[in-house]
Amino acid sequence: MQKQKNYKNAGTQILILDNSVEPFNTMLSGNTGLSSSSNLEGCETILEKAEISRVPVQSKSGKPLMPCKPTKARKLLRDGKAIKKWSKLGIFYIQLNFEPQSEPNKNQIVVLGLDPGSKFDGYSVTSKTVNVTGMSELPSGIADKLETRRIMRRTRRYRNCPRREKRFDNRNKDGFIAPSQKAKVDFRLKIVTELLQLYPVTDFVVEDVRFNHYKKQWGKHFSTVEIGKAFVYEELRKLGNLILKDGFETSTRRKELGLRKGSKKEKREPESHATDAIALASFAKELDSVAVSQFFVWKRYQNSRRQLHRFEPNKKGIRTRYGGSDSLSGFKKNDVVIHQGELARIGGYMGNRMSLHEFDLDNKRFTQSGNPIDCIKLFNQKLMFEEIAIRRGTLPPCTISTGYPLPLHPTEI
Figure 1 (cartoon, one colour):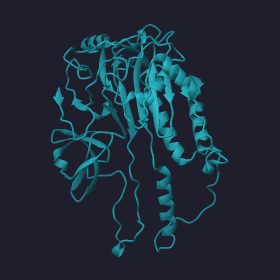
Figure 2 (cartoon, rainbow, N blue to C red):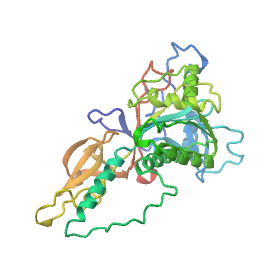
Figure 3 (tube, rainbow, N blue to C red):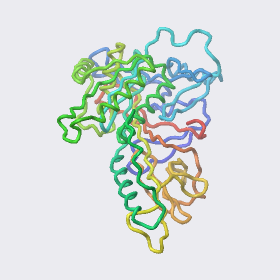
Figure 4 (cartoon, helix red, strand yellow):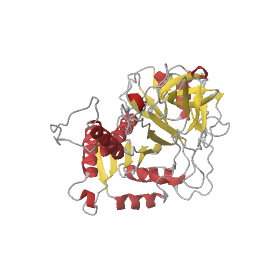
């Protein structure tokens, strides 16, 4: 195992696995391999007992199967009956080298709980126990970018340069979703789709958020939120059974399960949104345990769009390079690389130097003079993820994660 140093302000320890036959030992704390390091002190109900996280399983053809315990997954890997893989959400799973002879997932119920919001969403996948939880930070600033693009387009019409003429044949609103809402809907469905590739989900339980558009002057006659959620509901009904719940029902159920709710929605912790998602999922199937062993945060990388002309014309009519997804030859923005032994993410470039960003959700730039020779490309990542270590005392005891593994080959993600 090759160990990578943390960047400044990094929330987790980043690890890169070698070809060891024990691919799970970095996901748990201590030197006990796959055993739980939980402490059962303070448990008052059966729902608070510690649980070892389950490992998602795929068949040879890519069909999701019921998750298994880490001990069974380790045995399949050791016997050469499965291979290790990582999803685009950063979740470790195994894929079998054979198709099961018996009917898979027979009489099994797996539930996906979804707590949608305006800026953050909460997710959970449960069966009898909680398999995985997470929250997403939804795309933002879409309306401001569209307004900027609109002003720039209108400004170009007064210049002696190529421009798009005005047109009025683009006013068809059939099936139209506002761009700011569509970005959120697409990201929400993207996460659901990725989870469905790992877990055989049969039911979806979603909190039905009602937007009071009469209370908001800017939405007096219509609500883009209602249009967006109707589209999500239609897509989920195509994938399985959809159950809608009101907010007060979620709150009551969460209290019955003994789960806590945080007051700060922007905090990257299960109490922000994941506990509500667990409570929602429990409506479709009762839980034997609400212990959380895995918690992820997902965020979409937002590239700046290419701008051929800026607000202020440049001297001598030379266009400055701004936006786009290209970097220096051989690299693109969002590429994950190893730079001087540490993980980094590629940004833009100037001359023969690249800007490098920290490999975390904040994506903070730490240098503008990165040398391409010092960078080893791993893969391109448009959906950023981070597994957050769960703090003791905030949820029922569970396995504490110290980091998440990463694939060394771009085809594995």
